[in-house]
Amino acid sequence: MKRRDFISGLAVTSAVAAAGQTGAKPGEPMQIPNPSKQVPRVDHAKNIMICSANGYSYIDAGFEKLRGGADTLDSAITVVSGPENDPNDDSVGLGGLPNEEGVVELDACCMHGPTRRAGSVGGVRDIKNVAAVSKAVMEHTGHVMLVGEGATRFAVALGFPKENLLTDRSRRIWLLWKETHSNQDWWGPGLADPNWKPPAAMSSNVAPSDMELVKSQPAHIQKLYSAAADLGIAPQDRMDAIHKVLYPPTGTINCSALNEKGEMSSVTTTSGLAWKLPGRCGDSPIIGAGCYCDQDVGAAGATGNGEENIKVAGGHTIVENMRHGMSPEEAGMDALKRISRNYNHDMTRLSYLNMFYYILRKDGAYAGVSLWSGRGDGPRRYCVHDGTRRYETAKYLYEGVAKNWPPMPQLPK
Ligand code: ASP
Image 1 (cartoon, rainbow, N blue to C red):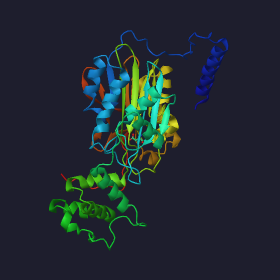
Image 2: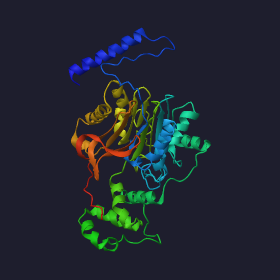
Image 3: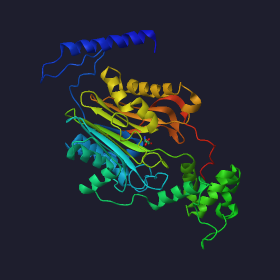
Image 4: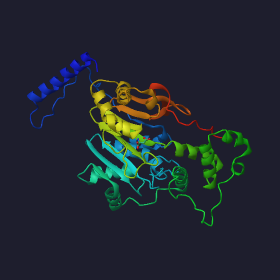
């Protein structure tokens, strides 16, 4: 921090302290002094939703509810329950990639602006709609956060159906990880297994057109390819599965909603980092990290490396930045810079991280900001609906794509 910034920070702190001394009378709202700029006054609020790109197929349904006068949180939960229910989305809800023991554990949290309440659940097993469970914690308990077995039992008590969230697809990818990332234990069929067979020869499980490609890869990727074939992973899914084994994917959905009355809410839900330690919670269930909403200012949610976001309390930091006059984009960029600062801007380390913030201010201004400009398949995008559903390209802190190592084979066409 420059000395000048530090001094102006002190000035703000003393102004707040001074206001505290004059104080508000009981029952009167306390005015929090705003340094130089203000959150813009809102004369005409509008219906608008913002969410991560994986909400694109579901945002229409949420927006219809919002436009029809439904509550902002209910509308946002409609969007995020789409991927929660989709067995083919392996980053959220049913079909999410599991922890290292092969068990799917889900995290979620929500904030309801109009009533200034919050709810959260972490490490939930066997219940897919954890965004709605986080809302139930908010509405039906005196708590804000429930985790683990207690959270599952609470959900069951409220009538949420229990089911095995590990789909066949996710199980096979987990087995591929388990078998190939453990050479010290006994995963995979042993020699005595009647079904044991020697690892498939490359020539038997690689399409002739892909042979050159696969043979040019490092030995461990060739081995993964064979193991994937042995596990019955379809040829067209093998490279994707190998990618997920080598680079444990993250993936989450956040959605914020603002209505014509100026009410706001936000919700985040995820199966978290693949192959995580059992019990690991990322940022998604942390109010103030994976999601934050303040009815006076706006909302922000996150996807990406949860550990990094928790350390900068990203959602809260961004909303506070907007309270102090920053635009949504400036507010998000500042949070990204804090992540960069935590690594002393070491680009080698940062190149392995991803972080994306979805930001909506109470006047309807919004931004999507990302640590890196792109991902493998093009620029980083997010999704907006204000009557027109669309993808928008994120603003970014650094040009480039977060790295994978070692270099991956190209996906066979
Ligand atoms: N933030 C999530 C977590 O760390 C993952 C993600 O957003 O991709 O669990």
